[in-house]
Amino acid sequence: MFEPKQGRFGVVSVDHKAGRSAAFALLNDEEVAPMPAKRESAFAIAQFQFDCAADLLDLSPCLRQVLRVPERELSVHFPVKRDDGSIMVLQGFRVQHSLSRGPTKGGIRYHPQLDLDDVRALAMWMTWKCAVANLPYGGAKGGVLVDPKLLSPGELERLTRRYTTEISIQLGPEKDIPAPDMGTNEQTMAWMMDTISMHKGYTVPAIVTGKPINIGGSHGRNEATARGVSFLLVEAARHVGLPLDRAKVAIQGFGKVGASTARFLHDMGATIVALSDSRGAIYNPNGISSTQVQRHKGLTGSVVGYPEAETLTNAELLELPCDILVPAALSHQITRENASRVQARVICEAANGPTTPEADAILHDRGRFVLPDILANAGGVTVSYFEWVQGLQSFFWQEPEVNAQLEKVMSTAFRQVLRTAQERNVTMRNAAYLIGVERVAQAVLTRGIYP
Image (cartoon, rainbow, N blue to C red; front, side, top):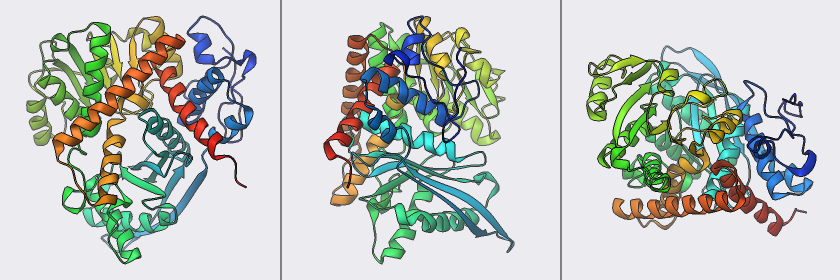
């Protein structure tokens, strides 16, 4: 392996020798350019994935420089009053990666281990995700370094309103539209919308998406990511010749996305054999009722201890015998250390960045069919787009229409990525990046460089 080089932001600077991507080379038993080092930052991996596509597209050095880094980065420190009258000072970010295809779009994350490199990576991934789904957006992401579980509802509201005020210079229906992410929800979006509306002096429903329906949210938004995952798995199962009604499915993560995915796949006839949350995993090769697990978690706070299943670790869940694996939790879950032991035929990345580049190469070599995150979890931003359009027009759709349009977008994106993968003889991830990066690059070229 080559040693990674450190660039301006302490990230991998890929050697483009021979004009070929490292991932493409490794998947063809060649050693041309360096993979990101073990435990590399999320942004290093995001840049590496971009470099792979840029090599295959033979992008000019100018376009590489433009697209390899975010356009705007805002870092803020702000005070929040606690319920006991004390003050805590928190750090927050909002990063806009690309505005070439339209206003930027991306979630707000509240997490105690968040850092700027995470937000940069998530913003870049959002750019390609929106382009793969052919939505008129660029990518953005934001967040606050905080554990929301340790705050009261009043503290969360004060935090959200102050953070929104601090980043408001970048927000607007025509500029940058936030949405919920890890640690935030529709109530968070309601507070953000109300804060901006109070500043403007009138209601601005299109300033955020993922809002409650009674203030301009869209039907179908809460389950959109999971529904998009299920639509893609129907297509993928058909492609690999796997009858979905006989498939065994393991899902890492039993939050909003994981729980809804389990329910949708069960309704399609699949057997859910494993589920997990942050405390651990449960496994029953004969099947688990996600509805009963949801009830158990509501009573105990975790899936662990569910009486009709064996308790495992999250790491062990990834290696279980199953047909479909859905990582729906955190990044860096499938690595070079465990990729050779993943038994699933199909891996559908409901989470962002769950598979490292080195693991990608191993999975490909073993014939595993990977649905990459920028394709697999695009359902959420797609229905966010529908919500934004409805908010701008003040004309709202019923849920069957939302779901039908979502299925159309996801199925079209899957077929385009699959066709590119077959025509270019690359992985589904490289194919998705080829489509996403090329669409954004063409927008940059068409618009030109100002001034």
